[in-house]
Image 1 (tube, one colour):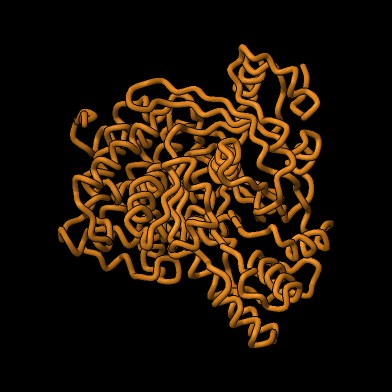
Image 2 (cartoon, helix red, strand yellow):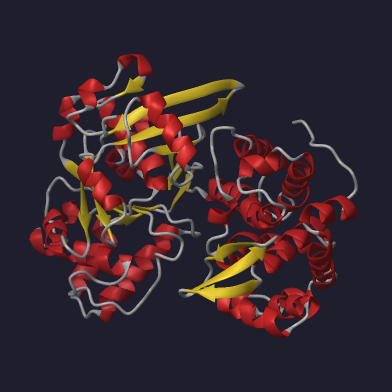
Length: 509
């Protein structure tokens, strides 16, 4: 079977209903610099730019910067930077299956090996946009020297690019960039700009350049929302390859739903002209509502459910939603506890509509979203996504949120490491080990090695460094979490749901 490449494009069977790129797209100017090669970027921003190019709207390609060598970089080179996006799901009760060979990426460069090429691109008059997805820990202020080749951090690399551009165009205010981070942190653009300015001061860069950063460039707060799991499992990969008639090492599967909300003005709209190609791109002066609904009801539900679902024996979100007990638990937690706790003025019916939409997405039969992938950076996600909801729930209802308490208890049990190998802590699920990819894994391993479950609960909830608040002071919460943790240990996850929560059915919208 042939591998995907420009040479094999003409060989793709037209009966497979695959949208392939046309030759002129390969000669469009490089207008976007993208930091990251994640499946989320391929499944949403890169796809949207590709779609706009096909419509003759945006007419620009993407240069991707990869911080580490190897991995998918080789696949990009071998496939001429083409990749297949399989959009699968249900929309308006209709089955949707769409397959596109995306060609928006022109080059993939290594930050380590190709840094000079990246700085050369910074001086290109065609360049207008920077996009990034460097995970939720990527936008951090670290001591960084932008004269290194390359700098260590993403903000350091971006600052070096901006400085090279400033020098190349002698500070021309018309050569500033629109910078759109997609990392899932509140006010990601505002935070990135603040880090850039601080790094510029620490690197003793001239005040004229610092003024140019602020006045000529725009760092946009943005929010991406589309479930794009990682590489399909081998069986799914083989099945899709048979269906497509070729192999693709970068094959990406996404759900139908998509949203890219970007905070910006008329200039931003003009530069990000790909907005016109798809209604899922929304450019508004304020995107807080989109962010709160997504962060609390999609991501927050994921975080409070992942440990419980995984310990219940389910590996994917779809499997968990096929279990009536767990599906009803997740739904009730979202609608009855998370919505009242959203720390933002939102219409309840609007939130409920979004919530039901999220539940439909969780049930998508085509997307294998693995719970273990969701547990990555578990502690940080719990703090960012759920602590403010918990506090607001208490403030509003003055009651103990039982569903959230069980979700938190499952988090504590998931973090119970039993062995460390090659620097990674592992937990145990019925005799099967699983990795704990969390920078607090060592902290939890120490607690579990010397404390009882009740003491672990109290110690963790009191940790203001983790949560920013002493959660043990919330009336009844520590007791509820400790009780559920004991039940999880003694009875198992599904039995705990069955014994501790009254029978219920999944509610129709």
